[in-house]
Image 1: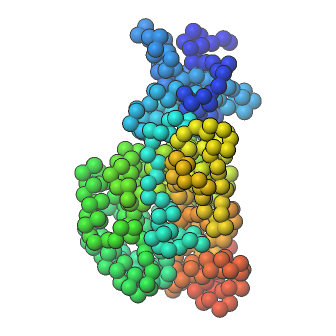
Image 2: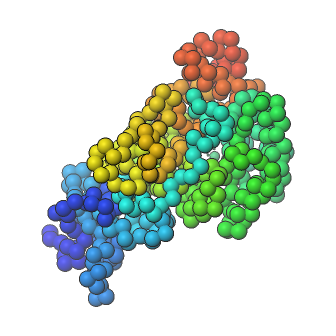
Image 3: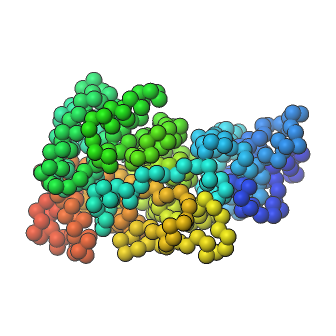
Length: 468
Ligand code: RUB
Ligand code: MG
């Protein structure tokens, strides 16, 4: 079957140089439904996700055709389709929402497809010029906390909801005095009648002050500012800023999928001095491998870096309770951390200016502390976005995760992993710190637990649960 004249307009198998800087590139897994073959379905996807619709329209102009997305490669055996999107299509204001509306928009609902999953994307350097990228990074948080040689150790307060403001703050305090660095609101935390937002903020401040005084260490709290509307979100941010927290000691959490990209980018632009924590509730609806329609964790994570999140959840690579694989989660985590990341199909360099020659942008893999470092200050690009690792982890799983990840540049937040400890949150935090010390000293946790009671209890408790 041949392509119809409209479909031909969205197909350029001889596109000479898709990486010439004019195009955003995308790879989809595509299975057509009904009558169409993969070439025809690919052209329909390119049309619907750029300038077109189901019929060629009489209102097209020569220039509008220049803006057509172009299918430039197809792997029929693997059902893979490469599409080049002229990036002049996109809002000039560095707008991630606008890109998603095109390339992961209407096309996902088309009748012509049985499967359509956006697996990887590539942004040309010229396009990166228009996007903010992260401002306050993990490195800034490390400087604030004075923690350089291990992951940032965090928790999510549990129960997820139902504690009063003061009960909530007490659990924060217990975690911090147990030795933890970072506490995050669980993502549904808002202004519930039994836990009013203003009181929660006020009591967290008191708890943090007390813990900092007693431990002599800095602490961080990530507040969920996701809200019904813009004004309420900003009110919450301002309330936190006015509560007397030291800069660096608070982060803003936004549930980026339910609240939307506009909320993420608003926070990035209004508060470049604050760690912006992207939680991704609902992502499974798009990202799970068994779901044929949507986009990958890698794509979501790359967009989060583009939008300027300081950190995004990237999954536990199968080590924790959520579905995920090393291939997907670790690829995503490395892509958002590094100056240059190898994706499933594309190698993304996050520099904003195209290299003049291969040596123009020097990439340094990782230094001894596993930080990504830039050899040359003149490098201009999107800063690193930090993987946040959460979901069913506990102290016994810290080292296995570091091994899978191949580095320590991440924040981990363990909910049940701390609060389910047989002697409560403080002991749970101590067990987490001890597990981390064992890792740093290259001692097996079972050995280290011989003279570290909290870790011994955690091992006993969590391994029993695992056997069940
Ligand atoms: C984890 C938790 C997180 C999700 C996020 O609690 O509350 O919101 O697990 O998952 P716990 P992801 O540590 O008790 O499981 O990071 O995969 O998006
Ligand atoms: Mg949660």
